Length: 241
Image (cartoon, rainbow, N blue to C red; front, top):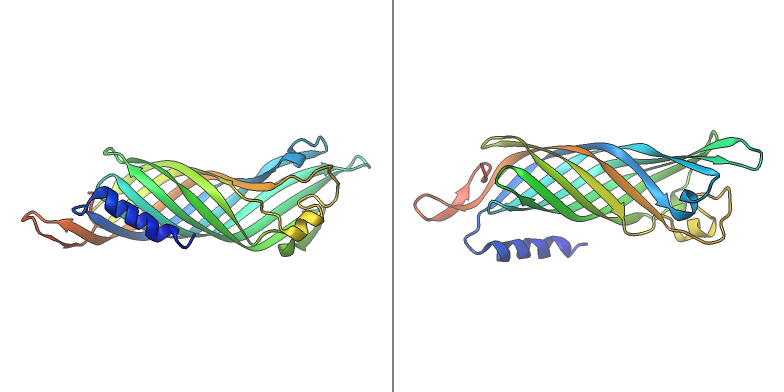
C-alpha cells in the first residue's frame, strides 16, 4: 500500500501530459450507512438470522485533481462498524450476537469527473482495526486477538457537486465496499470465530462490507496551471470552477 500513492501520482501526471493543470483541495468528510460482514456458513445456517448494522465515519480528505476530468482522493476516516445476528440454540431460545469494531479507514480513490459535475470513483481501502467487541446474549467481551489487525477492501461509488466556488466545494455521493481479505485472525479461526458458540463442518472466511451516503467539504488550496498569458504558475483556489 505504501507504493500505491506515488505510483498513482506518476500515472496521472503522465496520462494528462506535461501541460496538465494540477490542483489540491483539503477538507473533511463524513459518512453514514449500513455495515456488516458476510460469512457463508452463517448465511446458510437456519439457526442464524443476520441484520445490517449502522456505521459512521468522519475524517480528513486530500483531493488531487488533474486537468478537468481526473482526480485522486486520499481519505483517512475514523470509522465504526457493526454486525447484528441472532442464534437459535438447542434450547430453542434466540440469543443476540453483536460484533462491533472500530478503526481507521484509509482510501485511495480514482475519480473520473464529467463536465456536468457528476463523477465515478473506484479504488482500494485499507482498514486498521483498533478495537473489537463481541456479545453473546447480554455478555460482552473484548476480542481484539480473535480478529485481524487490518483488512483490505475494494470500493466503488458515484457522486456529484452540490456547490462550488473559487474556495469551497461541497460534494455528495454513495459508496459501496466489500473486503478482499478475511477479518478473522489465525487464533480466531482456531476458536471458530465469529461464531465460537457453534461448530461448522468447514471454515468460511468473514468478509466485511459497507454501503452508505457521504458528504465531503473541501477547500481549494491551489495548484499549477497555465495563465492567460501562457505561462505556468501557482494559482490559488479551486481549479475546475
